[in-house]
Length: 589
Image (cartoon, rainbow, N blue to C red; front, side):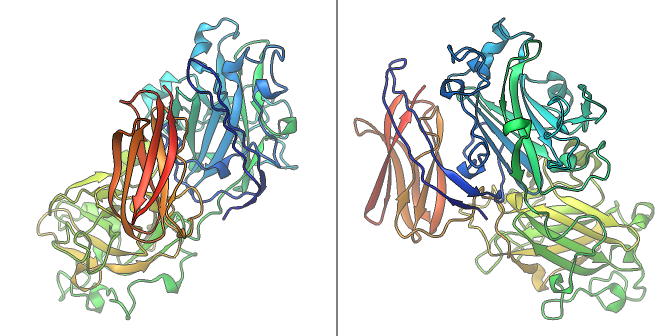
């Protein structure tokens, strides 16, 4: 939830710069209280998914000024453009359940590509972000203490590129951890295989990157560490050698900008199950109770010997959700032991346990669990057993989320994200498993046309052989329809609280504006209806059609690219039910 008050003023002034318009933007505001909303930032160098509420260098914290506006870090106040290639403008930070996301906006007149060719930068230069994971008055290792070079717990270098990391991992930069061994430059990679994704936008001289919380909040060198509710962040842009001229973005006293973090979810994926309640059970007598083989489950392969095949006998299914995850627990027969499966030749080709999801269940669903052969009757699946060591070695997640490509009745799936998957934890003693599946993936299908955010999903559990005769136990409603889970949390895919349905047709100003060459256009509808969005040049010629169809009530976003268009002014129009909205956009190349 985000609480704020204030006034934002925008001034547009015209001037001559390379025979184009120079737009000057001044934003004044007072942030009274900020707690990051659920976020899923795509690290692509486009910044469309960042919200102004995520900016940290605003009141009541210190505002980061550019050199020309009076930044005290300016090396030469008489010539503010000197050293401007390392002049920090703004800092943004947000988080979701798995990552802390950072965006560093440099002075728009700057260009970091100048640095390698400018001998005035002694030893070259670097841009890095420093993080304290235990900020506060009692912190003796974080940004509030000592020489800034040891006054933090982690850092990420976002410039220059680290070719070793790029060539040896699936990431762009390491997360470096301080060994807390004095005031020196005493760091090691937090993980040699898993790091940070980084994306630069050379045109805007901006960068965004993500840091895994799994690394950030499992420090190797902080004794008695407790997961914090805030972190502190400082940005450094400066020389690599003496005289160490640099621009710092920080609160006074190199204390770092304080950033409030999302609270952990209701379910800890730790294999202990203390946080599950009876109300979360799906297979109740009121729905379809899942029975063990000895209690009369019709899926029993050999009713005369119910203990046969019991290692894959499902007992109970639980599920719940919050803003970020679908949480699932599968309780196997208490006499079962999955460790038997690899050594038992009666399981043809081994065996697997997986959860299948339909994200559009109901009578109108033609792709979900209510339709067709069960192998095609779902939109996603997550395998809970066996473990996927290859996937875990790349992203740190035990299992991938797989999406059905809706291309027939076959086994036509692909991994949603090669670096972000599902958390899974087994308890071998009780033969019980729990998992957390990101809503940002599950509720963002790529192969379901005209998908609408659901208020419920359907879940089915499979435990069975990998090869014919395909003997298996299914936990499901009759007709492989899936157990219904009503979603109580938000969808977990927005960077700000969900806005109310507007009273009128609304076309928001595109962002960024000016742009080169990509921008996004946000619009809102009071009711479901047919809309048309087109872009025209100053002569009234249509240059693009961005939308033409039926849209639901609420907010939507479309993208526009001016890649093949010349610099200039363009007009975006939104039309629906006889109403029309127009916005002016500026493309500058």
